[in-house]
Length: 391
Image (cartoon, rainbow, N blue to C red):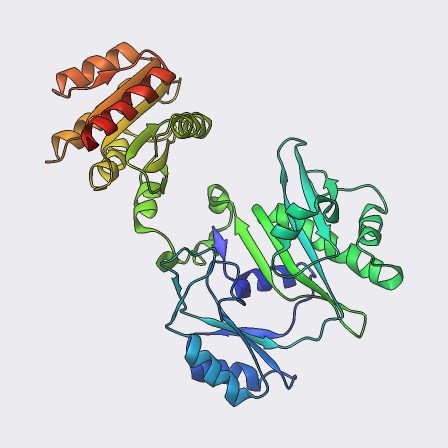
C-alpha cells in the first residue's frame, strides 16, 4: 500500500524524524491557507500522486508568497501528471502538499527495506541524494552504503553513528543522524512497512537534518494490525481490476501480453512468467491464487481473464498443496466459464493434491483443455496456441 508524501511525513514525525512544516490541501484556497499558517517566506507546492519523478514532470513548484501558492495549487489540482513511473496514462492530482521551502547545503539518500537473503532490516544510504539516485547507484554501486539491523530494530552499540560517518556526517550531525536512523528503523518495524525512502535528507545551513521528501510503502497483508491506516488507502489511485482481485483472495497485476496466467503461489507464478518470456510468450497478467481463496473467489479471478480482450489463450499451472487443492481451482474455472459467453483455449498443467480429481471436474463441466505433461510442455503448448490463433 503506497502512501502519499504528506501521510508518510506525518507518520515519521511521530517517530522523531524531522520534517519541514506543512500540510495537505485539496483546493487552491485551502493551499493558500496552509501557506499563511507557515512561518517561512518561500513555499513548495507538491502534487500528491503515487509516483516518483514529480519534479521533472512539473509536479513540484517553488513560490515566494501565499497567494502564489494558491495559484500554483490551482494549476496542479485536477491535472493529469505523467512521470516515468506513472506510464503514459499518468495520475490525476487530487491533492497538493504545501510546506516551507528549505535551503539545503547537501542532499543525502536514505532508505530502509528488508534484506530477504540476510533475514534482516537493511538501512541503506548515499552521500549523493536527489533525483536519479537509481541510475547513479547502478552506474556507481559503491555510492550505496548498507547497515544490516536485526528484525526487532536492534543494532550494535555505535552502529548508527558509524553508518552516519560513512555518509560524511560527523560530530553533532552524526549524533542527530543516529537518532534519526533509530526512529526510522523503529517506524519501519512497528508500522509493517516494506519500504521507506527519504530522498533527499537535507543538511541545512543551520546544521540540521530534514526529510524533504518521503516515499513509504506498507505491507497490505499487515493492515489488520493497523486499522488507522486503512483509511489512507487511495482507492482512486488503485487499479479497479486489481482491487476486485484482492477482494477475492487473489494477487493480480495486469500486463500487456496475450497469454492469461492462472497460478497458485507467487514463486511458481514468477517461474511461469520467466519460462513464458524465455520461450517468446507474453503474459497478460500476474495471478497468484492465495491459499484462502474459495472456488467462487477463483471464479471471480478467472472472470478477469475472460473479460480481457487481449487474452488469446490461458495457461493454468497449478501445484495442489495441503491448503489449495487442484479440484478447488478446477471448480472455480468451471463456474467462471459456465456463466460466461466467452471461451478461450486452455492449456492445463495440474500436479499435486487432487490433480486427477481436478481434471475430472473440468471434464464434468464440459470444458475442453489441452493437457500438458510438465511446465515446459505447458509453456510450449500455450505459445503454439496463441501463434495459431494469430495466424
